[in-house]
Length: 68
Image (cartoon, rainbow, N blue to C red; front, side):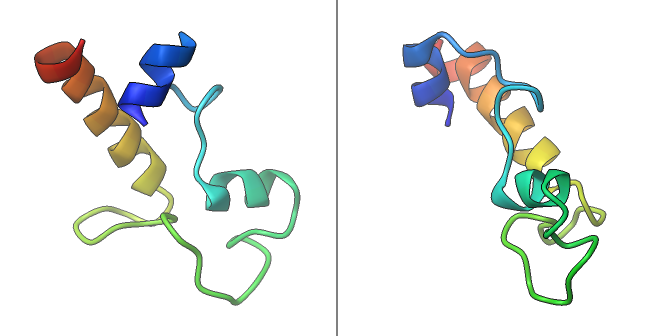
């Protein structure tokens, strides 16, 4: 994600980079409205609905410390 966002000059935030589960909720078919399992809705050690924030945060950290 970090490499693609840097190459495409995209800001790494929820307005520009979302997980499948985050977009699905916006379209009314995601984890908030269905019973299926959803990728990246939450990750071990995070609260429900925080997976995207964790991934975006890691991408920002990478660009600031290693790749940017």
